[in-house]
Amino acid sequence: MTLQERMNAMKETFERTLSPEKRDIRYRATEDLRRSGILDRVIKVGAPIPEFTLPNARGEKVSSADLHSRGPLVMTFYRGVW
Image 1 (cartoon, rainbow, N blue to C red):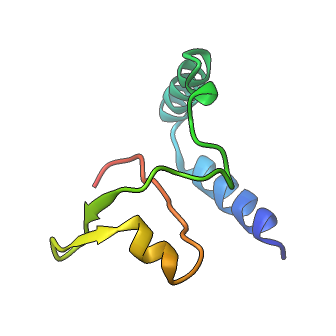
Image 2: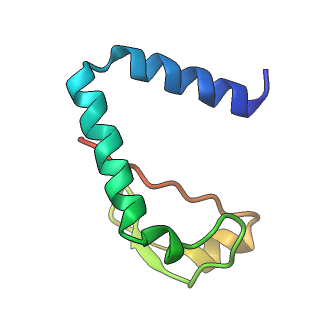
């Protein structure tokens, strides 16, 4: 199974667990973001990013340049409830 197939299966499983009301809210929020033009302003996959420094889980400052010097840097953003 390819990564895309696995991701599609995870999405389908997740969406089956949502109530219709929550699913509608999710779709509406996603569509609102698309209409806002945000996709025209985001960094695209594979594009270079500005260097940054952020605290890690232990509160220590970590630089993107330091991480990238060790190899490819993968970023993910979690949009949800903790």
